[in-house]
Length: 376
Image (cartoon, rainbow, N blue to C red; front, top):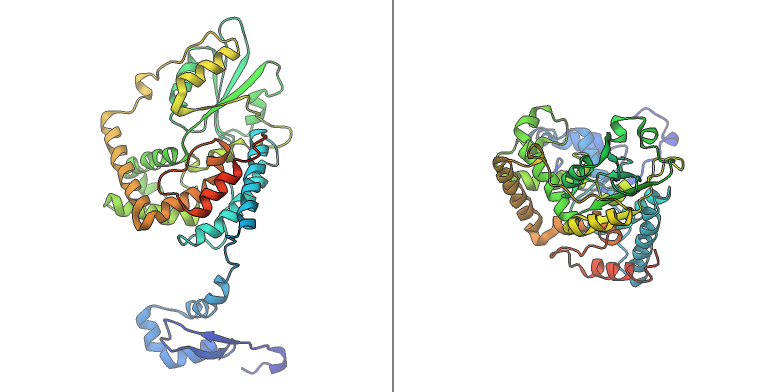
């Protein structure tokens, strides 16, 4: 180099590069690229490595260095406290819902990194707002009802029940309708909002099954991140999907987004505060409890034939679900446990039990602590 040495601060790096194939070498940052390329140019070509890759390998150890996962009693209590805070804020549809969930995600990510290879930083929470069904009670009450569609098992039945009422309308998701808030008429009196949640793992697997069943039609229209759809073998495709999921998150479908994130308001002036949250697994019971409390004379309705899944599509989904379950259970359930860390807030906020396989000692302790002092 002809530059002034005083202007250059060369720091020593202890480097092992698979491109150089050299033993642990003490090199400085100025001479590294020149030295490595000069002694092993043929090897670089053979390994398809370029100089940027060499530098990446050289600095990799330092870049990947992170604080150790805090598995102490105090660390677990900290995660549990943030989960309780997230539950309080999200069930109130507070503007603090997403910030609280971000704090949970940040802490859970350390445990996730000990299991699989996600991105170095947790992927961001997406501020998405799903479609809403709007209708009015029939009977003594004329309350306006809003159903927040979280893409659960109960969604088709809820829609059919709403269509049996009067004044049915569909307000598209915020991403498709910038007038989402105005179209909900949130400030009108006698408005009641509710939703149905589903077991997080069941909902996630159903969303994957839908995407996988449609892959033949969609594979050529997908961009970066969807390469796994090209794989023919279903188990390999499911494994590749999980590897991609932990790196890029729920970009594939908002149906894979944790349900708790949907409770966050658009803003302080656009808050869909839920009066009731039912569970898909007990749809009949919860639907009747809510409708009777609102004075509605409406029973639940079955979906129309057009909303039902065909036998052929049902078989495809079953095959996809089985493959994903096998991939989740592989390698000591590493990806299943990773999923549980990502969706831990859903399990706490909606009071679901962790699936068999998510039995890490720290996870179970956090869940037990999060359910204490439950004064939501």
